[in-house]
Image 1: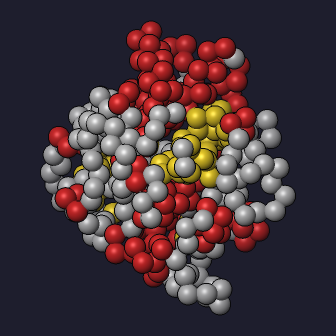
Image 2: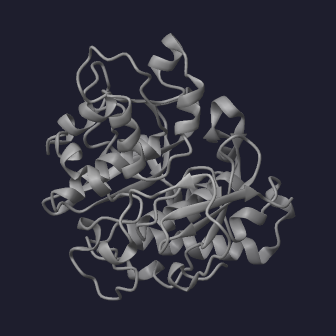
Length: 334
């Protein structure tokens, strides 16, 4: 496993993706080294959720879940959403999918004047479910409300499929609620998208444990439109769920450590890999039902200093440097 973020040293010259608008790590209350169950852990911003110079812009979303969701949808567009099916998805929007931080997403919206009213016809900012959810997480945290990404699978996106999907979990009084930012506020949804019921959504650890009793469901867990499914996909989701619970909100196509080494045929995996993934799933089960403090059950699990990412189908190595606020991207070795 890679070393923890605080131990990563990255040399070389910054390339391609520049996070120059993000504040330095010392300016953020990230609590990477926090070991106690501090109640402000999920109420403070992370490396990627911090809006940087756009705090005032983000505050325009309001503070009610439905209002926040409507505001985000007014200037964000999913590549497989209804707007894309109707009007298409432009090259610049595909490029947007590689943006990782709330500050970058808001910068793109501001530069295209998307927040100045419906008269502007610039292309909306392209984003994945992770990006929609992260914006909501950022808005809740801005108001001091604990919030985090919820990584898992939904049964309402593709018929007969548990589709890879990310929600915004926010703390309402004494319990966590799951907000589907893309669906909240829409008419005709057969459930409350501001509090997605458990029978319509499985977290990654729940999906992994379900695989143990229903191995045939593996081919229904992934991304239907891309033909991606299987135990290997759920294994990657376990890693991304762990990182999100520790406030490192990565992209759905990021892999590292064991998750980057697994073949798509789980029968070829060494027994130790199965054992490690079972242990991680068990730890995550305890972590995602816990309170608002940093989840102790996964704090000793290493966070990545770099990931292998597949934004355009080919592997790209992304170095995550919390101290310099940029990612150095280069083709990954095969």
